[in-house]
Image 1 (cartoon, rainbow over the protein chains, first blue to last red):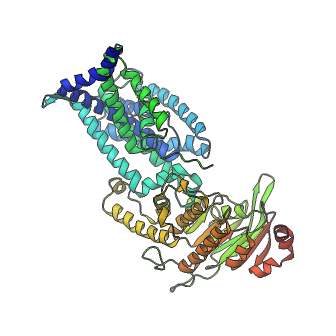
Image 2: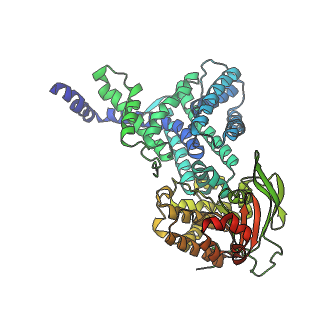
Image 3: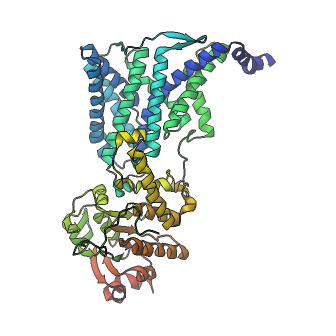
Length: 312
Length: 276
């Protein structure tokens, strides 16, 4: 018994302290992975904040944007043009979603809108496959997936780029939401449609803006994930990895998406490396969900989510 | 207390310059049907600049429908609505708000997760210029503008005496205060016409007195024209210049409070029931 306790509570920490550079590498790997999760989670948060809809199709939007970009590049379109066209495609998609999905369903229950996004999910998946084909594509963004050594710690160039990109994106979005006219309008729309209309906010414009921004975030996530693991249909499944991040950070908080991503990224890497061997490894894949479940019991609104207020 | 929220004067009938003639708002023979139900039948009324008009009537008389039509939430099947002499019958709610018509709701429509301060700041949205990209980096004009509007909002907060709850999420406030915050949000937009749907519903006597005082202060201080729906007849008599009575979707009386109070149709429809 005491041996088991030792193996769980003492030995891993001794290992960490024993090899600091390695611990640092694990932490950096975790942070990098975490920020990649955050990128996907951000898309969810944006749409949830502004329309109260849990957008099941966010993962497919990531895939779809990466597919569009790669597909255009494969056909010989120069990279800047391909990128611009991808951005335009995602904005056009936002307009289409507002017109076809959101507008007819205004004032419906959140669950109805959620189901509509499930439909959107399958449509986009099929549409993307029809247009661009279903084979795995390689996305080369010009940043080598290789490492350099800094003070004895290995750092991956691609992961570093992704991390910096995510950090910048998040900083911009956080300020946009918290301190500005546009951000306040977005939050107002999320909170109460009628009241938002009464103070002069056009719902439709706001929805197009927010789905466009979520589309842009999806492009960034698609590029980063696509460069790392190739553009393929399993890319849409990273949306599932964003779920524990959202539960931890709160569905309505941009900073929460980042902190949640970091906690999940670092947590699962540490668990895999130091505690994994105890149960034969491969706990990375489910550890995040266990963390999220434990968290739900203590703080259902997430770390930074808006308090759930119910007057009785 | 300056007479305006921002640095520029609020347009009003008594202001120097060129005051427009004619009523601020004209409702011309509007009819609103929901299926077979006539919510409003051939209702006409005017609201003049600087007036406080009370709209009264029993439950289901069509009072809220009238407010919803004026603010663009419903569109009438027949009739017209003119604001400052221009037809705006078909405008959407956010366009109506942009014209300078503010409103509150019967069942308090606040942004519950946002603080009182942020709620009232949303009232300034129409006054802000759009700098989407500058907004994103919170730089230059975007930042200056934010601070400028913040100052205007602080004046509304002082005016309505809600300093103590500025940072509280609106959803956590007691009902009476929520109503006051909603008024503050509407006021922050510096509307020419303010529509209040039962601003005192569910309040105790003291809260009602406070709210009456605030409404009168808003009217005196900013020259805002006000139309309000109210059930409490003593409040109506105290604060309104004119009373419009509705019953079963029709207008049954329109005139000074004293006259309407003694109108036989009104007594039959409403007062007789409310004050045995």
